[in-house]
Length: 442
Image 1 (cartoon, rainbow, N blue to C red):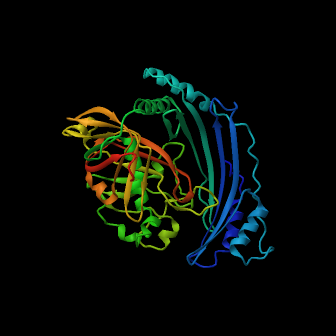
Image 2: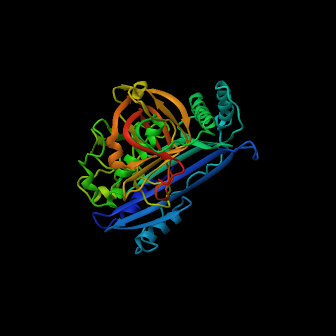
Image 3: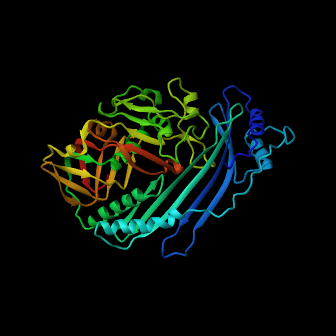
């Protein structure tokens, strides 16, 4: 591990000197990052490597936060950062901890990056289509060590991939925990769907049945459930504790956030504050059970539980965020979700979703959809938007499919902190929802 030689005991001793009050939150957050990119074919060949390391020292006292960060890991900068947040410690009040780590300058080995574009092109040929695509493939790796004055959390690491494909008809991208044949087929299937729908006209405004594929459900879970139940978002409308016990969704919806069950490579045992993660029921039977909270929100509330503190960068403080969302499967076969719908839409791919935390208005943008006619899939329509208030939209779920499967992942950029999020979900059927052409304001 990159932090195996870090003198965490010395760091903890120095942190203890600025934790003067029982309610003080003091910690040091060390991170190393590595991004390896396979550039597109029309760019200079060869892997591009970006590495960085650094730390943050944080002190929270009486509702105020002091944060000092450095883009290096060494004893003297650490001592300076500690004095910066404490503001009163003299230069000789404690020794500088030994933080010098061996450099990581070995060339990366990532043959899987170069193999993916060829694998996707083979998969495209198996679908009997061919068109030029510009691929950008990256491997993202991150190592984290959190140290407190009385507790040293285990070191954590994550490794995953991002794939972006650009065609003349648009851009598509996603995240993968690993690059294999399944990943290549996922990319190819998405590109085929976008290519075949490139000239489809958008639908007329509609209200009725919508069947959401698991990848679309993942976006809904992230935007309409997880973001809506983050403690800092709830606080914009009042007391976050007041959400507990509220019937937010249909009784058939059971939603969890469980970082410990995330795909291998991004699984966590502690969050970015060093707090153990937990299998957190966001919704049980459609009722809010446990909103997402970090250490500060939990400290201020006897109801909220920590363990969901995440930070996209050492230069920003942590906040409550989801990691790996799960929607428990229902009893309806996926094909049967279409039965009984004389008219409606099947939503198989989402480009983005957005939630207005103050109004509760949710919009889901889709590059295309399929009409449902007499319980079967029919022609393709172009860009459209599913919209509605979260509290109304989630109550319109009438059936949950089976089985549940890995349902997609993507970047979340809330508050300027870019973080990967993952999901496992089945398909859903909703009734009485509004779908409008993609060109109309949402």
